Image (cartoon, rainbow, N blue to C red):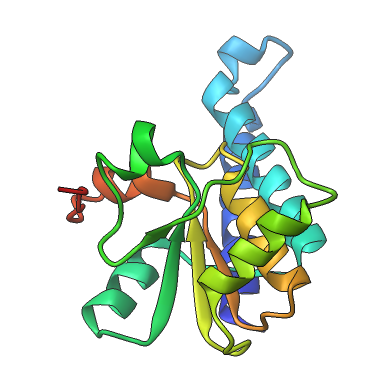
Length: 177
């Protein structure tokens, strides 16, 4: 099984185990059985990510994997899909380039935007492309990864944790000077 599929299944299993372990001693009151809003939210996000990955046709990459690849100076393009002024300019993952996508899933793309994105991604359709946004709930990275795949790129990853997870992990950020 591929690493991205394993990572996704681990995420789903952890969410389900959190719910099941909380329910082990249950009677009927969710507050007494350990089913917290956080558990429900974790399961929701895991299922949402699984559906988006399936529809988008891309792979998933953890923040730890991205950090290791950046440290090893692997050849890749990292794309920050957050707004330039409100986010990217203030903080982004080192080496990332910026291309803003909306949060709701895009079923179509404007031809001018499509051309700009393809120009940014470059001519090498096999180059590793890693797309991220703000945090797990944000859908911008889903759009960026999905549209890279639709444009014919074959080595596309989405990094779910985004810039928030990157910072929470203690990894360095860059800012536009």
